[in-house]
Each structure stands twice: as structure tokens, then as C-alpha cells.
Amino acid sequence: MQKLMMEIDGELRENGELVASDALVDPAQATTVRFHNGAPLPTDGPFAEVKESLAGFWIVDVSEERAVEIASRAVAYIEFPMEIRRLMDHQPDHS
Image 1 (cartoon, rainbow, N blue to C red):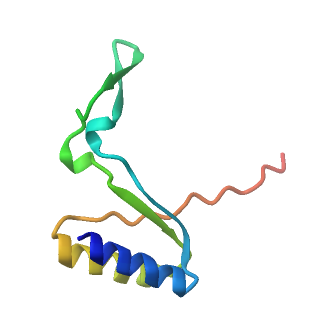
Image 2 (cartoon, rainbow, N blue to C red):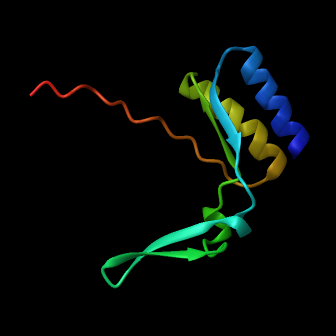
Image 3 (tube, rainbow, N blue to C red):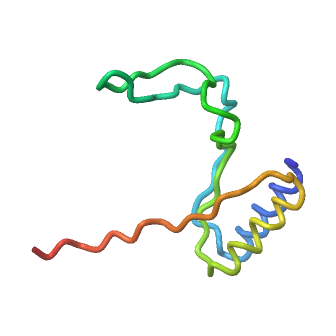
């Protein structure tokens, strides 16, 4: 999996499509924050469900079709879902 992800990362860089990317530390080193009894409660450890685990990310400047193509290559190999999301467009407030 690492080889494929590095291959895709290199391709995105070479094509000028990559805006940002990074790997994340192992979930065992995570802090999970939940809302409990009216207040945020941080807890050490990997207590999020595996389906909530994020291993890394790419921010790319591509069409939706290209984003689906990129994600499809990874999903075909890892056989786990990958989410594609747009960055929120922050327009200046002219009030």
C-alpha cells in the first residue's frame, strides 16, 4: 500500500495537482475528543472506530472527475472506502 500511495503522491506532484499532503501518526498516539455531559472530554488513545481512522490526506486542485480517478486507484488496491470532499469556499463578508 505504501508503494502505491507514494506513486500516486509523486504523480500528483509531477502534474502540479498536489496542493498539500501528509501522513498522520499511528491512531494509538491519538487523542479523541467527544462531547460528554455538556463539555468536551479529551481521552488518550485510539478509541475512535476504525472506520473513523484517518491515515493521511491529499489536497489536490483537480476536477471532481480527476479526484474520483485518484481515489479509485487507491480504493482498488486497499479495498477500503476513501472520501472525497471539497474545501469550503470562504467568500469575504461584505456586510
